Every structure is written in C-alpha cells, then in structure tokens.
Length: 303
Length: 326
Image (cartoon, rainbow over all chains, first blue to last red; front, side, top):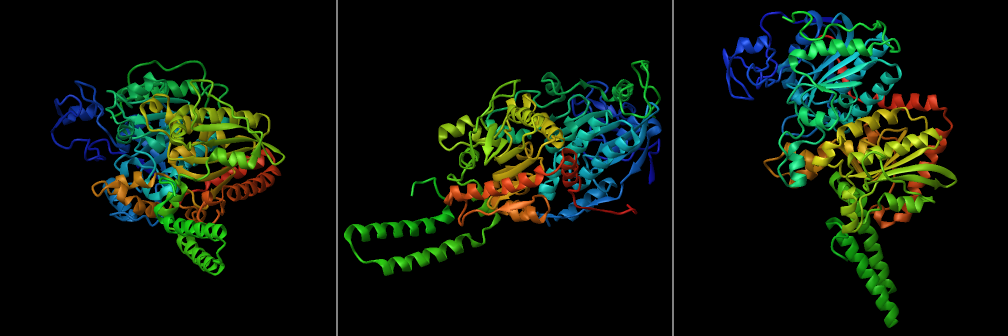
C-alpha cells in the first residue's frame, strides 16, 4: 500500500493537449488569452466563458479529496496481451508508451480518500492513458473499488473519463462492462451510495456500464457524453448532428443526468450528496443525521 | 442461384451442386444411365465442400454469420419451440421490432424467449432496423425478463445484432443507460439465463442482453467488442476500412473457438457443414439440445447458488498481472 500525495506546488502535466505549460494560454472555448497561473488557481476553468479544460487524475485528486490525499490501491495492476493484438504498434508497446507518458500502470487510479471528512472509495480515470479506455485492468480496479466500498461500508465515487472499451483486448474489454455492472448490483443490495461524476468525454463502453449506474450522476459542463461516437452516428444518419448533441446539457435535458456541476462546485456538491445518501437506512458505517453542511463555496481550501 | 443469396466462397460448391442436380434431372427425364458420372461428381462435391469449409478464416465466419439465408431468431423459435407469444413494448416509449420477446414452450418447459430479429425481406429489414435495437428494445427485454424472474421462468436469449443503433433518437432516449441497466438488473435475476450467439454479437448491442449463466456460440457466429469494420476504420482509416475488415477480424479474435479459448463462452454449438443456413432444421435441433441440457443443469441450482456462480463467472474475467514495484 502506498500513499499518493500530490505536492502542493507545481502540478505535473497529465494531458499535453489540454493543460497548458506556457505562461499564457488560449482558451479552447472563447479563444481568450489567459494567464496560466490564473487558470491553475481556477482549476483550469476559463474565467471568461467557463470552458473546462481537460485535467488529469492528479488534479481531480487534489480538487476533490481532503488535503489532496489518496491512499492508493492496486497501483501495480498491469495489462496482459491476451489477443496478441495485431496492429501497427504492438499493444504492449502502446501500454509502455502510455505508462511512460502518465506514470501510471493503466487508465484508472483507485483508493481511499476523504471528502469533507467522510471516507470514500474513490476512483478517477486518466484520459491521457490510451483515451481512458477500459480493458482488463480498468475493469478489475473498478471492480475492486466497488468491493472495497462494500467491505468497508463507505460510499463509492468514480470520476469517469473514457472513450470506452479498449479495442486491443477485444471481448475481454467488453466483459469488463458486465463485471463492473454486476458488482454495482451488489452495491445496490448493500445500500452503499455511489456517485458517478462524468467528465469530458465519457462515452461507449464506460458510459454503457458503471458510469450510467450511479445513485446520482453529475457531470461537468460541456462534457461529451453518449453511447456511439459522433462520427459513427453521422455516417449512420448521413446528416449533420444537431448543435450541442451529446453534451452534458443535452444529457440533462433528456433526463439522463441529475445535475451539471461546475468544476469548482464539484466538491461541495459531493459533500452534500454523500451526506444525504448516508442516511439511517443506508449500509454505510458512518451514518449522518439530518443536518446538511452549508451549501456553497469550497469547504476547505484545496490548494 | 439467385444473386444476394450466397457468398463468393460458397459459389464453386453451389455451382457443382446445381450441376449434379441438373444432371440427375436430365438422367431421369431422358432415361439415360449416368450413375457413374453422378457418383464421380458427388465425390468431387464432397471433397470440394470439405475443402471449402474445413478451415474457415475468421472473416469467412463473419460472412457466414451475416449470410442472407442464415436462420434468424424467429426461425429458431419456430423450429425449437411451440406456442411462442410475442409480447410488445417497454411501457415507457414504444415497441422495438428489432427485439422480440415472449413466452414459449421449449419441449415441456415454459421459458421466456428474448432475441434480436434482423428481418429477411427488405421490408422486414427496414421495420426491424436490421436488428439494431433502440433503448426501448433493451427496456422491453428487461421488463419481460423481470416478469419471467418474478414467476420463476427461465430465460433463453438469442443474440444476433450488428450493434445497438447509433442514431440521434437512440442517444436522446439513453442507449447507454438502457444497456447499463440491463447488465446490472440481469446480474441478480433469480432464474436460469441461457444465452446463445446465433449470428452477430456486436459489442454493447449484444452484451445488453448478454449477461447470464451459460453463454453458447454457434460455430459460425462472432462476438466482439467492436465490429471488424469499426475496428478497421480505427486502425487503418487511411487505407480504407472495408478492405481491411478481414485483417481486423483476425486481430479481434472474434470467432467461437477464440472465445472458448479465452474462457468467455461455455460451449460451441456445431453447425452443419457449410453453415447453419445449409440445414436450418438440423441447426435448430442442435441448438435446442444444448439449451435444454443447460436448463436442466441450471435448474438443479438454488437461486442463491445460481447467482453466486454467475457472479464468479463474470468476476474473474480479465487478463493482468500485479507488479508491486510499479
């Protein structure tokens, strides 16, 4: 067991495309030139248009967990190459490159942390690792995270960010959808709360399994959410897609999302929801009475 | 041979069959003695058929799974069961004709049949959306599976889909949610669930009715995380997806013997030489026998034991190692 602690100063870049490394950066939403330190202070949300830059697992840990501390589990789970998948680049090489790039063994980080003083089984996906795709390792780690929530009787929080199942593991990837969903059925029986947090993007195999099965499902604004990829849909219907299609806003409008939550409001929202869900009939160890924390504002300085 | 009813690699076999048929007719009509010639040709046909179908590539199996004459769900239902009563609707939005479901008698056992239905004629294909379900299809299936479970009736599922429908309306009505919910709810249904992939098992569209106690695959069916064409479009987009689908089929290892080797399925159901369409009745009787056998085995288990074994089956799927130094 290792302690995962993020240094308060100087965050490592998780996603070369999104988190800017210069002094100034251009907003992907409105095009405004923003001072990078200002952006960092705002958790990579544009001060003018509230465009949410994509951030990595480390930033979510720092943003959501008390003191930015995750007691990490199953860090060393490493994918095999069960199909000996034939591709331009060999699958083990793809894995090695992604490991080099991210410092992670695979596309999800799991462990136990505290949110507003309450212990939770916490998982966060890393898009920079082969598009956050789910193969055997992601499926297994999420499965263990669900089991951990049940054995310790603590709520489950998963921050999803994934293009879907990992093609290079073929049918084994597809079956991770069944595996994780199966355990979530048991979680429901155990009355352990599960909050699913969707970030940009959460699609396909991940969306069609654990990400859609939260007691409460919240998403950051403007995230791409859906089952099929836009290119596939466009080719199927042979016409342009309506504006805002498959966005968080679209998802909420059609009734598949409880709430769109700005990144800066994620933590207080989670605290409120976790308090509500850990009621007297829940299976969680530390139940809470009727007093909800005061809404609004970050309860403690995240940085 | 009518165009659109055969595959390219079947053609030599079918042509030779036609020649033998013609010769036999001629011999009969004209009262000519051709027994020797016929026997020779029949031996040639036998050899050719064996050679053609002995070692099929994965792509050829994909083609057989999509064969225009391949038996579909309702063909099997008709041949395997009696008294099938199709029930309709998800009680929320509508009825999806790509998903059929309803009670039937399998021998002397009342079961719920669930399955995708592609459609044979152009009109049927369009009405059934080529077997691509919308969310209401998955919800109809779940509604009726829940009903079957409530009254202690086993569930028999036949999978045959090129994928869940990727369209605007499907997204609006929550395709991902419908599939995810089915997986979670099917996990704990306290009745035996026997699944057979009879043709195409494309990704989440197949898995959305694919969680159960026994997973069977017809010899020439395929089951994969993505279709060969979809995979080729991602891997070899610049070189053209269609031409590379055979390569993708090999990479994905989507054939029945692959899935048996990978520990995903329980059994392969043999098909008549040349594919299920060459003898639909024989295919149906083989499928029926294995389904019945599975139902008898599973019927001996108490619901708790059934669910515990189902859990173990899916819980252990995955290939990985643990490196503590990482």
